[in-house]
Length: 620
Ligand SMILES: Nc1ncnc2c1ncn2[C@@H]1O[C@H](COP(=O)(O)OP(=O)(O)O)[C@@H](O)[C@H]1O
Ligand SMILES: *[C@@H]1O[C@H](CO)[C@@H](O)[C@H](O)[C@H]1NC(C)=O
Ligand SMILES: *[C@@H]1O[C@H](CO)[C@@H](O)[C@H](O)[C@H]1NC(C)=O
Ligand SMILES: *[C@@H]1O[C@H](CO)[C@@H](O)[C@H](O)[C@H]1NC(C)=O
Ligand SMILES: *[C@@H]1O[C@H](CO)[C@@H](O)[C@H](O)[C@H]1NC(C)=O
Ligand SMILES: *[C@@H]1O[C@H](CO)[C@@H](O)[C@H](O)[C@H]1NC(C)=O
Ligand SMILES: *[C@@H]1O[C@H](CO)[C@@H](O)[C@H](O)[C@H]1NC(C)=O
Ligand SMILES: *[C@@H]1O[C@H](CO)[C@@H](O)[C@H](O)[C@H]1NC(C)=O
Ligand SMILES: *[C@@H]1O[C@H](CO)[C@@H](O)[C@H](O)[C@H]1NC(C)=O
Ligand SMILES: [Mg+2]
Image 1 (tube, protein in one colour):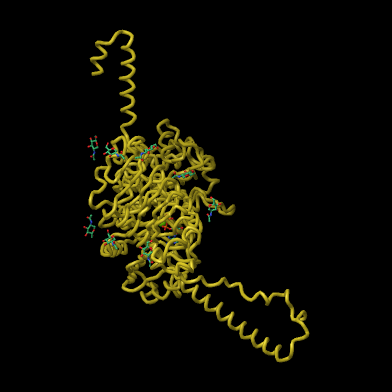
Image 2: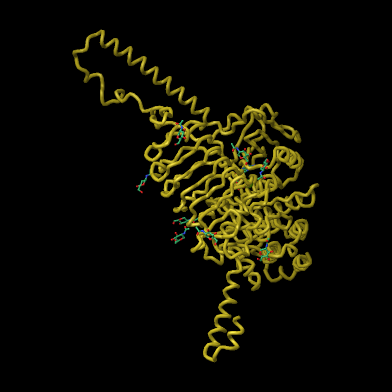
């Protein structure tokens, strides 16, 4: 058509057609990928397991997502207005990126198995009228910001695992005419305002909701501020002298009894509160397995008793997989207990997997001491490492007295490589870590590194690891092909290891949001430096001044290999270990080099003398 028009067209219109053609070509090239709403939906898909293939026609080469299953767009503007995917057994977590769908009016995902918490970003759905997440496994609390959903008409979150209180801001949701929060674990005072119009069926089956007397909820227990007359403002001296002796005696007895009563109430409340604060509720029908590898392992019974005593103040960290507690059982060595988030594969595979992980033993791997598997709680029990994690060491608050010098950095690099190499080449079956990051490298008091969380990526729903990948800090460690396919291989670990090396060398974070766009991702930045031959620029200035060039070159070379975009170009971990060990074997052991000695060595001659490792490396 166009070509015909070109032939027949007069001279003056021909250039116009050529332009149009060019524009058309350009346009089709640009729109080859899906639009931004489609991208958000692809991220949503990536985090879900889709056993029945409900999302199989979500093809990211479509221009708009409007033809995708379960998606409806506005016919004229082509923006997504509805997502409806109920009863598809979708498992996984909700993508916060959905919040980019600015014009979404209905989100219906009832009767799936969606877990994880409600992304606070969902309060950006300013057009949202219907939110139906009934009968899923959503945990966490309802974000306070949901009070901003002014257009919300229907909110159904019944049959989930929501906890915490109903946000005060809900009193502002005046458009809402249907609300069902029944069968969750919500507690606390229900705000009034808009919520007064709903009857008790909206709130049934929760842990401990109170308030809203007109609805029939129990009244909230009065705040423990009692008996203001006991204050110093009303000393007995000011009492009217007209009181008779009998009155005074009665009053004293009354006061005395009242006082006792108040104390009793306070004690009971404390006791009740203490019991409510049990962090790990094992319930019935679970089991604890302690691997009896070494001596000094507490028995299952001792563990059971100790686990009941875990409280909030024992929390030492929280990450993508769950909360971690410190636990001291009698005189046994301290333990770390990790409570996994829900969204696990079947119990059977959990136990099988952990039996395997229990046999893994290496000096650079955190020892798994046991596990606990109950219907609603899964616990992993590890040795406790007192030195914190590498992320804190490198990027945490700097203690002026502790210098993280080169020998320590090298020790960590080598130890982590050995641990990973053992997982990849020393175990049967091989174990892919899947989440190598600086927060998963724990340290003892000697700065010996221990890899933690190996094997968990496989155990916990793949979609859940994506959460740590994007929401948590580990984004910068993910190999590009893994982000695309979600398929973990050894080479994915090697990539992450390369990023760890770069962190050790540069002292920078894997992802630094404070940097300009091109530099936020450490690996990407180094790749571009490397292609111009000046990767050395990334190395911490202090190290460049004090450490022999050959050592830095060696580690940098290894790091750049590891972060190759093509997985095949990355070395295997056992080769990495061999290469790093060259430094120890050639007597250049950084474990002995103090800052001063390495400054004394003449840089140029060292480079010439230690060419060997670099040659060896290029043949990896
Ligand atoms: N065995 C352990 N000993 C000491 N601290 C630990 C141990 N396991 C985990 N931690 C601490 O708890 C934090 C949270 O752990 P985790 O749930 O694995 O999340 P992440 O690895 O994403 O930080 C870790 O960063 C670490 O500081
Ligand atoms: C997506 O669409 C493109 C072209 O429309 C097609 O070539 C490709 O095979 C499709 N992919 C899937 C997974 O359906
Ligand atoms: C589509 O969007 C336009 C512009 O926002 C609006 O006027 C129209 O009512 C919408 N159509 C439907 C069917 O919602
Ligand atoms: C939108 O367009 C589709 C097909 O073009 C049509 O079937 C549908 O009825 C339209 N919807 C509205 C609300 O106009
Ligand atoms: C969802 O899973 C249940 C039980 O596993 C099964 O009975 C049901 O058919 C599945 N639903 C779909 C749509 O496949
Ligand atoms: C939500 O809106 C706020 C303010 O408009 C904005 O800063 C934020 O980036 C938005 N979040 C998402 C995920 O769109
Ligand atoms: C909740 O969803 C699951 C999975 O889709 C289904 O098996 C179950 O029957 C549903 N329960 C209710 C009460 O609808
Ligand atoms: C309700 O909305 C008003 C006006 O937007 C705001 O000032 C108030 O803080 C909101 N109340 C709550 C409890 O969020
Ligand atoms: C609560 O209200 C709903 C409709 O608003 C009604 O169907 C239901 O029967 C009521 N339940 C009770 C216990 O009054
Ligand atoms: Mg961890």
